[in-house]
Length: 315
Image (tube, rainbow, N blue to C red; front, side):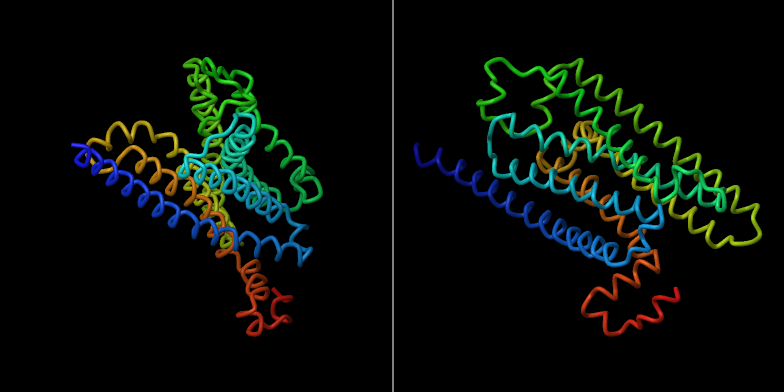
């Protein structure tokens, strides 16, 4: 009887270890590829100071830095969860704080970049002072402060389970540790709903206004259409970010119909709606922007010899 009961346990453990290895092998190459592009882009910006004369590129740089912080914190939490590492909440809290704050910062940056395109189209000669490159840092600081409100409230309203010491009790580092109260969970859902609704209204407003301007203008329609396509892609990024909140509903509807465990469903959501949207940012600016793409090719050793520096300066 002892041998019969041991076999299923060993098989389950083996399958679990294989699942962990597969998940890590999926996440880490994506993370490394994104990090390589981030470093390449930031090096390109640092090497060519003219990018800092444009509020558009400064917001893009801020978005890349925010996405990097988000990925570092979320991948760290992912690896800790896969390894089932437990430690005190006081060490877990900074990771949870940065993960939540940077996740909420993403839609704020998307709406701000959409507004920046709106200002560039409608006020090309008399741009408001706060949207100029030398003052754009005030908007960036404001976005960071707003994004920190929700995780700060989480820590203020935190109600730990009995016999859990914040300094010594080892726990799995998950957001549920800080959301034990039903009232706190309801407050968080309501605040997230209002937060994303406001951002959605801003992006829709800029899209409709730029669309109307595209139909009205007879000159320079190409730049207006490009701005319109950028706002559309920002809306797609926002939609993917909002899909992360549909995970409980998807688990309720699909887990019983699809041969996926709850852990596997959570992993699919993590890859599709946390990792994948981060790669849309390089797609929107790094690939579609010819000026940035040309300078990035110049930085790469395999392309540098093929690019004429005089040709770049004339663009």
